[in-house]
Image (cartoon, rainbow, N blue to C red):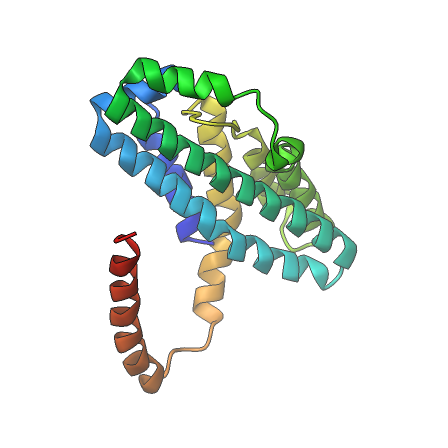
Length: 219
């Protein structure tokens, strides 16, 4: 609830200097590889981190509005899956631009853009899910009116492959921060403190995960 919104906002701001449409995003990825890699990586990481945040909020909603919680949580999580799918296509297109040139990458994107696939039928969840979650949060009193409206602003975030930043992108990600950060801070303050044993156990686990992460990059 803290890292997810902040990473989404960071990624949104990092790619804000460039036009939001995919030809300009591809050109920026070639001309400013470090900046655009950081932008898209932050956005992807934030998007993935949002699923436990959404499930946690859905759990609070479910205490008084279980049906709303089920529908809202399901729709938003499916939308998060779809954005992750788009991120994979983004990466493929950027790789084509860097290895085969902008013209080949632009043709690559334009050729497959109208093709149908599973997520073609679920695109509505990316935006619609946040509206349902915001209504559910308000009706269940899990959030007040202001934070519920801020949460609904995430529905303004543009969707699709290689979409850059517009004004509504900033509004949406700032709204997400307003909605989720206070709840995340509250959960941190009220959560049980880690024991000495759990901290000591976390050290070798962290080393092991780092080793697995490195092995994963070897193909």
